[in-house]
Amino acid sequence: MLPVLLALIQQLNGPATAPAAPVPDPTPVVARAFSGRARELSAQAPRLRESVTIDGTLSEPVWKQATVLTDFH
Image (cartoon, rainbow, N blue to C red):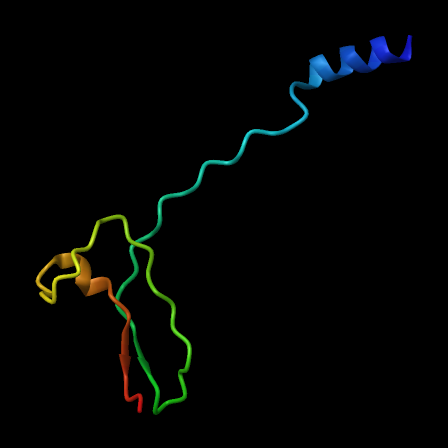
């Protein structure tokens, strides 16, 4: 009798595992500069929606969101 009741409760509650929550789209980040001289020794890279071409040319608009590291030796 108990297994039957457990099976009915499980059917009413749905599957045992909850569906995974959707992953939110990354929010574009405004560029930020981190200075080694100011002891800002860690930096976060922004999460981007667009693809980036690593070709030495920084003319794509997405590069305006890049994290800048300065004053490091």
